Image 1 (cartoon, rainbow, N blue to C red):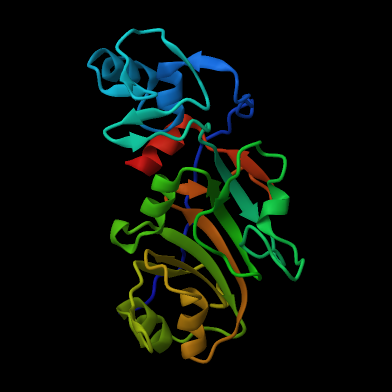
Image 2 (cartoon, one colour):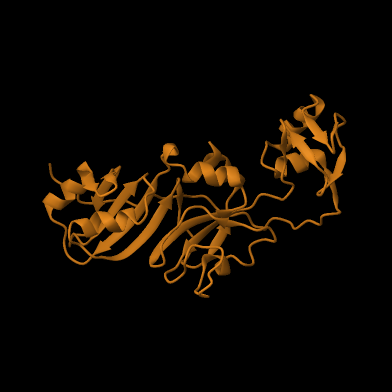
Length: 260
């Protein structure tokens, strides 16, 4: 079985919203359906149905009147769960090198949080990790439910990397990676692998596993040095129109696709 010659990067026509999320004040009155929608439960229209059906409690009392307004610091409960009134924010970052994926660093190194400092008032955090020298796509959000979904291995979230190595890969090693290498913590399953250039030093690798440094370890196991590692696609999202070091808000359509 011969390796494929080319590996095409995923393309996308998705565009960022023109305006950032609006900032809110804790004492501001907002419609209950908006509060519920901001908490990520459902759309505003669906929230109206929940309210009419008596599914929503505000400060311990069932509220069924449409158009009811509440404060952000009111206690709103749905199915026994206290909703977070903070507007949900979804940011896609094209991470550059020399930035670590953490919300804080005691050694005062550059972090991805510094790159998105002006994105919103809400406190967002990275979904998963990219090591310091790995570049590419990273999602930051305050939607804990979505973050857990994307990070959980059972959901098989697809990630596409471009890997540049120090010497041409052999057919034998190519097929070993394609078949799944056995590493110290188990088999490294690869969904797809392909050559990006004729010199066989740049490859595309699509995986869904999320073990620590898994892509680098695959090539290091076979005696290659990874000189450049770039995540070019994550969960269907691509770097189209997103330069290195820049970020954008996800569109509502992209968010819904991630949640599905």
